[in-house]
Length: 100
Image 1 (cartoon, rainbow, N blue to C red):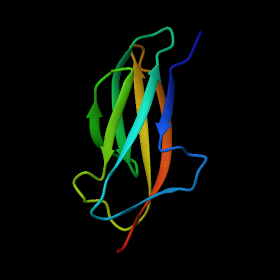
Image 2: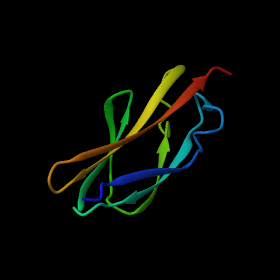
Image 3: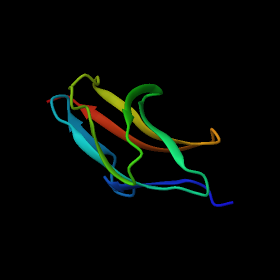
């Protein structure tokens, strides 16, 4: 059976790690490609903690650090899609918050 796929469109992972200052944010743009089972929930985790509950829209953009509450250092943003059968698909992106 085809699996659910999460594709990160921006920022591109192949380039250097995304870096932002503590008072900045960036938009994580992604596409959901559902497999044979409908996706029922989409979540954003920052460093393993649930940060935002997102919609099930196919094309999405979510702001990372829009509340300027992520500490200086290296972090991981992880998208999780859950389908009707409870199967989880995850995709992560490293980023770094730097001091001015």
